[in-house]
Length: 70
Image 1 (cartoon, rainbow, N blue to C red):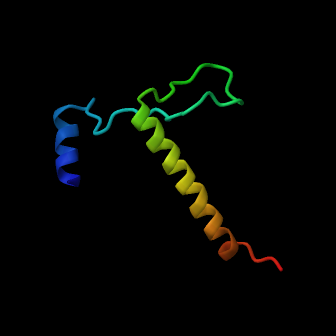
Image 2 (cartoon, rainbow, N blue to C red):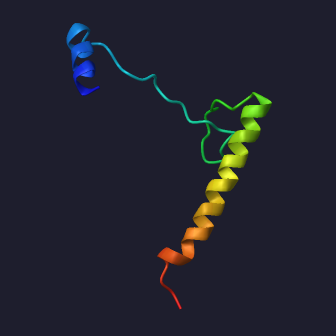
């Protein structure tokens, strides 16, 4: 893969292997004044919210293992 990447870069120096990534917001953040792209597809919106909740749950479960308090 490394060699293929460098071969493609040699053939075309403008080659980029990935597209730019946009943050996926499900609502307008309160701390950002400019409008941001909001996920409009209902299924994608629900999946984003479920993964956000799952991430928060994992953080809560890991918290006792990494905070050494009495």
